[in-house]
Image: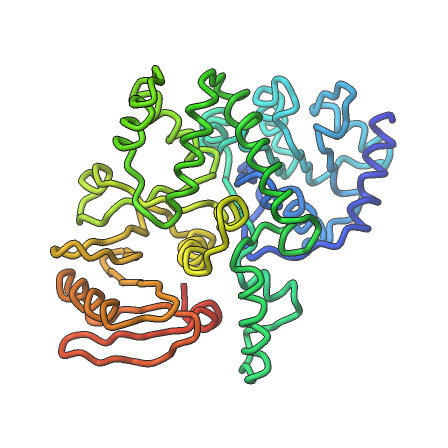
Amino acid sequence: MDIKSYLIDRKEDIDAVEVFPRRVSHQLSKDFITAVVGPRRAGKTYFLYHLIKSLNIPKQDFVFINLEEFLDHVNIMELPLYHQEVYGVLPKYIFLDEIQALGDWERQLYSLYERKRYILVVTGSSSKLLSKEIATQLRGRASTVKIYPFNFQEIFHVNGLDTNRPLSSYDISKLKHIIGINIYSQFPDIVLGKINPRDFFRDYLDILIYRDIIERYGIRNRYVLELLIKNIIDSNCSKFSTHKFFNTIKSQGLNVSKKTVYNFIRILEDVSMVFLLRKYTGGLRKSELTMPKAYLADPGLYSYLVEKSFSKALENTVLLEFVKNGYEPNRDIFYYETRGGAEIDFLIKTGNKLRIIEVAYEPDEEHIKKVARAAEEIRVKEATIITWDTEETIQKPNIRINITPFWKFLTQKPI
């Protein structure tokens, strides 16, 4: 297919696609290239469709090309000219999907940007277009948008539920049903029922290991990498000791350095497979030295590759709801340990304000005690325990503990 026919046909395809809006606000501008990044299969391409449809961009005003789909050689500098041949005018927007398929994308994209004629939006797989690389390669001229799997407000919208109004008991029952189904994974393909979850995650992990890590980083010790990934997934919502893992593989006679293991862990964070949450110590440098807790980019990696655990999925999803709403692990979100060693799931830092968030399917007296103890230590007057269905307020001498159902946390509590 020639390039001009492709550009016309692709717009017809976009017209026909059903797109669910994402709760991501971003101002497009000629002054910055918009770089859309995030975990594989999170919906970056569909986010471009959403932008086109939500802005009601006429066909004569935009170019869209998936550079992995169009197998013939293409110079993106020529795309505006092809568009002008078809529509008689230059485009106002240029959408470049999977730009890493272009060999020298950095040079071409920057040259296109320097013309200051177009609003440029690009996506790329995590194997080639990490946000750190975008910032470096485009010399500070990129504005990054992070796209993650659906958050629950988006899932409610997909299911036709409006939570911005008073909710009846029937609405709440439906909310809880939707949460119960989707707590185990929020990837769009799973939520929309397009694929069997176990097949999805087996394929997802294979592509992540081989394309995003082994090919990109030139990893040779595949066995240790796969063993590390398995151990991190098994450690979901628990502390992960790099030192302990290193000793385990050394005891098996594997010749690998501790530096290599640390590099592998950093790579898994870079490709958005895992969030390693550090303990709050009051100082970022001290926090970096603490043993992290492992949280996955989607609870399905544990739910469908290890076992279904509602409590782990609930805790992991609470963290992800904060992340998807702009909170950054180890800057805005930590875990906490009391002086007696009791672990609090999350401590949220907003400016100088601290918030305690504990997650418990059904809280007991031990949860109440440790939350109260943590609140006393960090000198806050209020804390939250997120549950499945329990709701009450407990007033202690110096603290109020709000026990809140997960559905209410999602729909009423400001994040």
